[in-house]
Image 1 (spheres, rainbow, N blue to C red):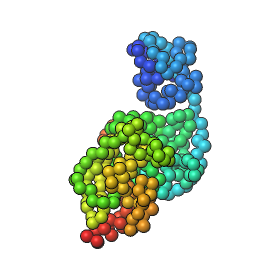
Image 2: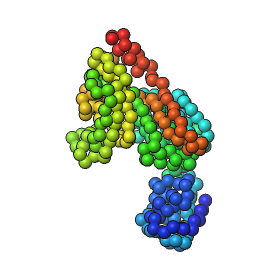
Image 3: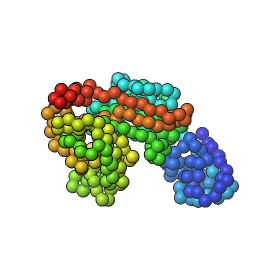
Image 4: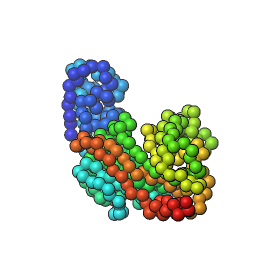
Amino acid sequence: MIKEFIVKNSGNRLDKAITELDKNVSRMMVQKLIDDGKVLVNNKKEKSSYKVKENDKIIINFEEPKESKLKPEEIPLNIIYEDNDIIIVNKDKGMVVHPGNGNPDGTLANAIMARCKDSLSGIGGEIRPGIVHRIDKDTSGILIVAKNDKSHINISNQIKAHKTKKTYLALVRGIVKANEATIDMPIGRSQKDRKKMAVERSGKQAITHIKVIKRYKENTLLEVNIETGRTHQIRVHLAQIGYPIVGDYVYSNGKNKFGVQGQMLHAYKIKFTHPTTNKVVEYTAELPEYFKNVLNQLEKEE
């Protein structure tokens, strides 16, 4: 499919100008098209940094997205909500979101491929599940999946602009004294262990808000909101201030009397603007049974 545009306002970079001319494409997608030589300005190839001029003629050759290399797998999913544009999933603990080293299949992406079949995003030139944000393998809870390019771009832009609100529940070791607090510490790749993230001066800004829900004898249940989405952000921040998440073997010794393997962290609520209706929507994901059982045990010990 070929699209043509005439520039009315000069001065913008080519990639930015195209995203303003066509609201159905992302900056990342445009940059790839430019790098692949699929964009012509006045019949010439230009770089993304090219400053457009009034009356420039832009021609874009959109290739039909290729079939995904992802293998569809019939894996049961806990679907909270679904329409023509989005799916809201309550991901189980232990499920990886995307295939990677050591996890070639059995992922949420494989399951979504089987469920949605042809109705998926084609951003990046490949038909694939529009999973617009991730949570760790051993973090359970809510995820948005976009079923088409328009929804994918819309929700991705909301996330980048910090217009989505993600709320988590975390059970930590120790008694958190402050009822509410904000952790503002930069996070980057650990200088001591490249497999881990850490609070590093050279890292990117990371902001986490915590609120005490319940204090137990040796543990605290926290509500956590994040302004930024750094890798392992909540786990790193809570460990850094001395309250590691129960079961987290990466950022603490993982010791817990409950026998929990992996962090007790659950993404339980998300609030965003629906990409088609433009209405603000909010969805919650029920706590997994193991999490409920641990809280019940703590209640009995009170």
